Image (cartoon, rainbow, N blue to C red; front, side, top):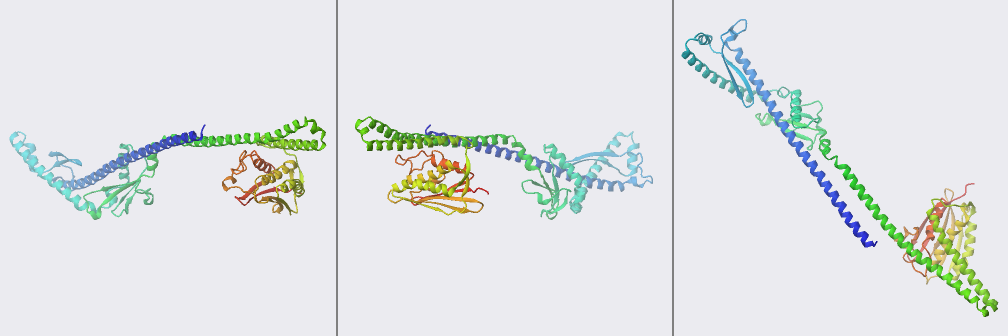
Length: 509
């Protein structure tokens, strides 16, 4: 699959997931807002109904108080036993917008007695009843006016604890909230214009209330402005109540996020696999070229051996023998490097560990490699300053690690500058040995430094046929150093040179 196709699919899927997430978030926000509006409307209706009930209670209080005064001043108070004679009376039921009550009108005793005894005179009785009803109406009107005047003049002076008892207010609030489907805990207080609590429920804490979970309803609108009282109610669990309506959306939101993560991981793996495929193709091309050259040389030497004149010349035979031997070694070396690739598929390499003097081993490697460096006009220097250099390693793999680093320095040298190679060792604290391989070659770009230890990876400056390699050398070095419980790092400036630093634990005596 082409990289452009992968990018197109990635963009389309990203837009799809983005749109899906936006729609889910918008839907959740709308549901939360709708639930919050429904909650606020239900609370406002409940508070308004509660305020009406509290005002009705106060009206009833003053009406009963006035009725008690009327009864105490009526003609029945003249009797010593306090009971009214069986003279009857006129009972009248009236209704106001906020109250229903029964009123019995008592007049002078002789008039009431005459009304009761004069049953034979229907016309006279009717007229008397009309007069009584008329008087009753006038009396009722006056009494109601008195009650209203009392409410206007005396109500605001009553203590707020008497006008709105905590238990009564809680009962009304609970009843009205239940009628509106709001069965959740609440706390309340009666506050003044400055929001100072005058009377409150035991669990009310002003610091816990805020604009989001607090509602206010004015009480007793007839009171003077300076004495105005407000019912303040807050709901500690309002947020939980509102967001409970969108709990069912959380799993779908989580699943969408998981799908998005899986998609991103899949795309990353696809790009990595594509990159690995490209590196493997480069590896095959390089390997073909690497094998083609020694095979061609060996084939040509074999053809020359068929010539009788060549076989008769000892010098030519010696030359052909040397070529065949060198090319065979070269071919064997390339095959071994390819076989090293199998180590990367194993979780643990098979090592034959032994105590090795790193200084001595490196000195032998430098002695062998010196001719190759000098062939290109270069110079190699050994600074083996470590006093304690005994490490527990696999000698063959340890030798290959140093050899690969030196071979890379030769491959990526500058053409116009003599190669300068320095291999050094020194002691580190914590019983560790540091081995450094530094050169003055072409260096490595900063973007490539993070990838040079990846399998099949070759820097752009080295991915050409005139520089031999499969992209396995440094990956092999990195794996071997890790298997030997060490660490490796690289420092490089492009155009100046490269330094590889290996740190290995010393053998404990």
